Amino acid sequence: MKKILSAMAVSAILTASVYADLTKVEIGAGAWAQTPSGTANYDRGLGVTGTNTFDETKDTSAYVWMLVKHPIPILPNIRLEYTSIHATGKASGSWNGLIAPANTNSVLDIKEYDIIPYYNLLDNTFWTTLDLGIDIKVMDLDYKVEPNGTFTGYEDTYTAPIPLLYARVRVEIPATNIGLEGDAKYVTTGSSTIYDARVKVDYTFDISPVVQPALEIGYRAQKIKIDENDEDVKTDMDFSGFYAGLMLRF
Image 1 (tube, one colour):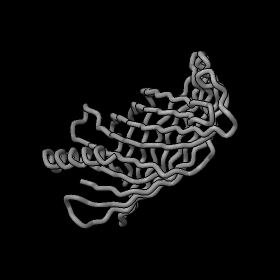
Image 2 (cartoon, helix red, strand yellow; image 1 turned 90 degrees about the horizontal axis):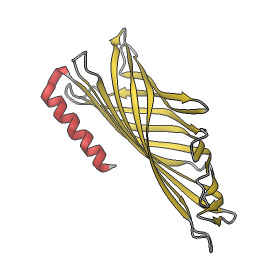
Image 3 (cartoon, rainbow, N blue to C red; image 1 turned 180 degrees about the horizontal axis):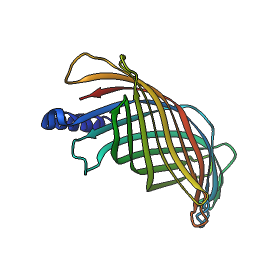
Image 4 (cartoon, rainbow, N blue to C red; image 1 turned 90 degrees about the vertical axis):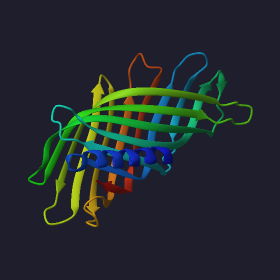
């Protein structure tokens, strides 16, 4: 987390220094108090046919983001995001050929890396900004069924790049430093649907013409529903809750 934030900050400063007034750079970091819900079903054969059910316990996860908007119309702008998710639950069924006893704990850790090339269709036109693009969401999942008595547990890791449509709308309230913003990433195919949506309000402090700090607070909701016949892991997971963080505008 610290390495990611440091790298984004250095990139932002270098970009702003090189292109001066031609490029807009923003970075932000904060915490997301998300509550998980739903299930994940494993059917991988070889003794792995189990179910995970989340216990809907709130967990606070970190996030970092950066956007770079340049003046070259033919080239897309770029937005980068990182989010971590930690969720606990209960596992049942067969794992490596062993039946999990009642009340066997499970842990799911997800790291999400979003690479979003986008075009700026409106740039503060009548105080409104509109961005459209593609999000390549790379998800690193680390799932663990914890040992319980003679049950030895189970571990699995999985990395999946997922393409989603991306849209962002922002409205600046005239004569104030307040901005209202919403964005969404979405894809659906067959019986599967994945989305990641946010709404927020932010306040920018007019302290310096070079670097302007800001505060943001909002609500974020994710759904990961994978229900395809050829998939050995089927999920119907939701993560939602409020988030808050700090921003820097260059």
